[in-house]
Length: 276
Image (cartoon, rainbow, N blue to C red; front, side, top):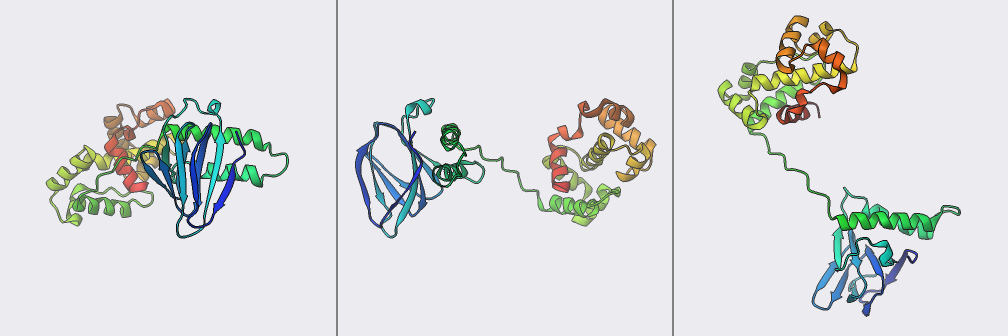
């Protein structure tokens, strides 16, 4: 592995055709570049990482309008397992550390203090970069469907009502009136979005808060009932047992191994919308 380095070129500079006998990472720090291949051209901009394998004939045309600067590092095939065979360009996103690793490599090679074990750190950093690069981009997050306007209005009402403890018991009829829809329509929207009727979704959201208090505090069941919008300890015990199959006291005794209402994706989505 050669030391990582930075190169500067004036506007319109070109690097003639060449063939490497090792691998090279190249990333732009300023300006643009065009990578010319035998049968293709690739553009390279800041935020992209280029991998050039050995044996590939290529050249560079640097930014035509302004000076350019790029970072690069050469390394042998022993560092690339499995060895990539094609020229590849990866976008460096805010969700992966590739951009930071490139900057770290240059820091190690140039300004790291004495005794920092720069060469060893360079090899470790490069190995990690290669694994990330070869693994490919991170999967895109799942797109969460937008709530229908009436349901979004009802959830917004709940967010305001339940912004702090204790939770006031809010009925489906009240939410429907505030959203200017019928209870039946609100129930249909709730089933489509959360897989539960509106009443069941509301109750399970309050049970989720009760679960947390049972496992994370030493509050009495009576106090938890009051905090979570149940009439009293008996009411909480009856509804909690109907949902969980065990009483609140048995749930607390079982500890963190107890099943949660949040295992239901619809309840998890609703509680995330309500409390983040």
